[in-house]
Image 1: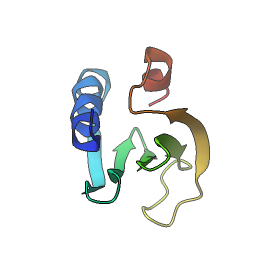
Image 2: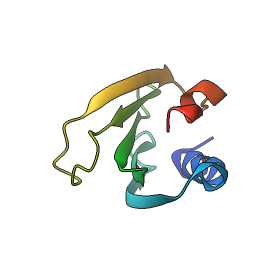
Image 3: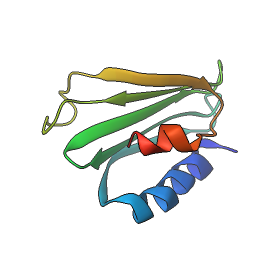
Image 4: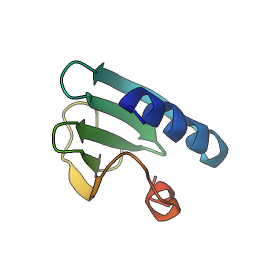
Length: 92
């Protein structure tokens, strides 16, 4: 799975859960597949950063009603790969 497919999968799952707004999407396939996708969900901003070289996905959340990109980020989890389980999706 590449980062574009990851973004599509997240959006398919979020549609049934709540309303969301895409804030930023950047995918660089020529840089080991590095990507960033940012969503606003229920007043929080969630940022997924993928480091393709290390195969590491990081999910961060802002405080309620902060403006992107000047957020104070709290790291929720870091995983290897691009596949989220149900527990990680329920955090959103």
